[in-house]
Length: 270
Image (cartoon, rainbow, N blue to C red; front, side, top):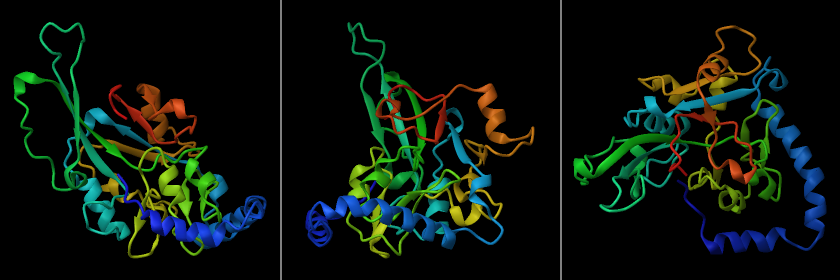
């Protein structure tokens, strides 16, 4: 769920940065330099990003669609309150019964997310007898190992931190929107207040200081499990959950290798 910059905005920025093939060759060392500088500014004193690997798992069966996560995210991260801006949101999936006489095992899938689920979900107008299954799916940045957004950024403002979080350095972001267009999960938007690309950072300012992301903190059912893969503790929440549940990713065929994992994910989720 993203808010895309206008075509004119993108073209205006393109004209200023795409001055020929030199840009392509120059962007690689520039990107490396930006990543190093951005990282040094983002990490609090005493935090070593090489000693952590952050990961989130979402248990779809536990999500009740309350929307507290999306609301907490906006409050914690200063996300504009308009319905088109989200770092995380919740979708409702309603799978209908197959048509009479059909050989299909299920019918049409209806997906909605009014205001990102922040205000909850109104009762569906679909009659109960026509519903085969319904469930809620939280969405956020997939923290891809091979992220299209970082590859699309022409100035290196989007980068993959050593601890597994994909970030945006707002000092370098030029607001071209290339990363927004490149994200196959619709997880980026153009922040009208900062005039830069914006997205979920797993509440980076919190997790690097030993706190949980805001969405995890407020979830009343424990649908969001968060932890550090480098934590050797036997109580590591990620390892404990993965050991007892089958987990998967969204759109695995894209080869982006998301770090965001899901449990009990229906095949209709996209």
